[in-house]
Length: 575
Image (cartoon, rainbow, N blue to C red; front, top):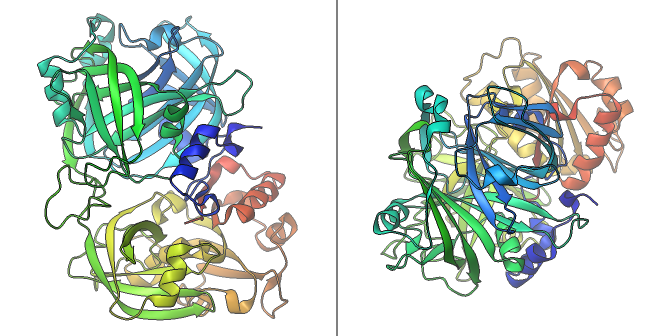
């Protein structure tokens, strides 16, 4: 009955109101796990700050930031995160740290736009260590990655002196509305954090606290002149409605605005109302109105120097003007269909190109986010880019799309997309990439099912054919690739060619589940098949991509072979 299997009734209500087809969107592109995979554990351990959501004794959620030298958070086990920090004086978090308390946690690296979330419970508080006054152990209920949308990137430098003087910070000034200066901070802000909670009762498995990032172009948070009310747009997200689902059932929430210019911190508690039909800003699917109850302003709280790098390509404009698509709020990069390849009876590759070098920064394995117009409605969809960036042309890319039951957009494309059709690319993202898969390792086992092959195809093209940037001399890659029949095996000819082109560095093990084919393994991939064909499994990294119903049992088989699951790079493929 863990939370990761159960969206609560607020989240489900919002999905229904917004006509989200759960079959398509269930945990799209991420996987919610009851443990932290290695890449998340390493990520949390390398951060100089974490964002925490907590609930005070009056049931008010607050969003806070805890800071320290990288390593102040450690993960002794895949289900545990130990935090040793000095909480900023006057932060409500201080009183909320107690055994049994729910906590929401977000690690966000603004420079790389990586972010990982974790919800859990504090199981132990220990104040015996001398260097840090606040030491507590969090047990994971739910761990998941988030896409890089709407994150404005900034480089960070730790100010060691300020960090060592955290205890000297003056407690916050309290008020019940915003001053003119504070209004100014919010109007220029492009980033804030929101803590929300849903705790119907202690035994309900969907209970918990969430803390989440909200980003946009400066001005995306509107402030009424008297400083009592805020309003911000809710942009297209992951359709899981974690935060809005909480607010739908419990309007209490806490906001935190960091001032990147001077290190000030604004923490604001209040109550939010979701304005379901308000689309008064570009890209707004709905608006959220927030009535302020308490403002806490801590001066020069953050021991960091920040340098603005860039704005997310997804972040909509804040005012309507010509050239902006009102539904998505963005001006994207128009692409035209140059070629269509029928890969299998239900899968096509679309070769798209445009006037702008769109894939200059693409890392093989990443996905593109696209805006496609069908009968006057704009749909935002994400597909892995199956091509790799090439030194010949950054003006084109390929996406490989499969027909699927209930797939409004993919089925429409399959039936109606022709040469000359247009689609708009609005951004690139994802950290299931060649870099994270190899992770400075040279032995890799790729496990794919169905269209889960697409990120691997991009990586293999990147490594062996298009524009090799990695040293491939000592690479040893095995691909275990499951499809129903030989005819359903996407890219089979090219993959076979790659085994030769790679001069033995890449080995293909095709598996068919519904027909017995020469040169292929037959049946469902199980531990016996893995260990017979990949006897050195334990010395390899594993990267896996496929539908949920493939990945879950597959993780079970690996676990029985004593493979450390946290060393598995996963991409859930329900786009």
